[in-house]
Image (tube, rainbow, N blue to C red):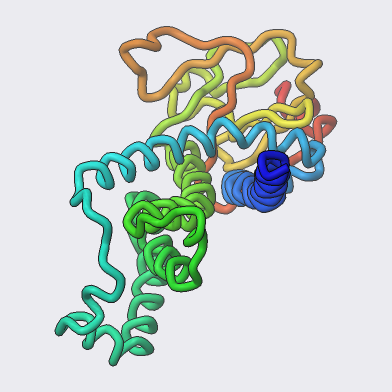
Length: 284
């Protein structure tokens, strides 16, 4: 009987975790997609079902976050192995200063985050998720999140930090990848096509059509010369040859078929044209 009760409790706990993790993962995927496509004023929900959109976000979000998780775990394993003592630093000079100046410090911290977000250089997309996650992780620790499941305080702090960081990395990662395309730092461009996707005569990589991505049976391109978005139905695209810029040693030459890249900021993009408008303007 006792073994059966423990098994039932385990199943209930797993179901509870799934009920929490599922909407959390969906929110992270949506944050990435809205940050990514929103840079081009594209409402991706108009072109694909929500389930298809979430599937398309799994790989980029997972790739962005996996690198961060490995780094955080490495830092945790290389740090002091002993468990943190509760309240160990509260009465230290630094602890007393922080407790006595919570509001002004919080205001200054938020103002600094806003300034970095608004005026910071391109590297800000790497820094902001960490800066946002740190105070959120501390709040999760104070709220006692996972305190019953994870007794080791330092390990629980790591888990809370990862939970707090993933939404930020999803959103800011989408913005960063978008900037790579729009600002011309890193993108896939059209080399040749059988469907009239025109490039300027003798255009270099930075002047050619840039591949943004695909979703819901549509392929999206950026024309840098006019900052316009071109949309083509995937089933009407018979042949598409893409190349990477800047070129990578292991990826010399060109790529074919539809592999998604990402967009960016730095320019104001008009609303995406329909496929009918594209076919009329793209075959000039």
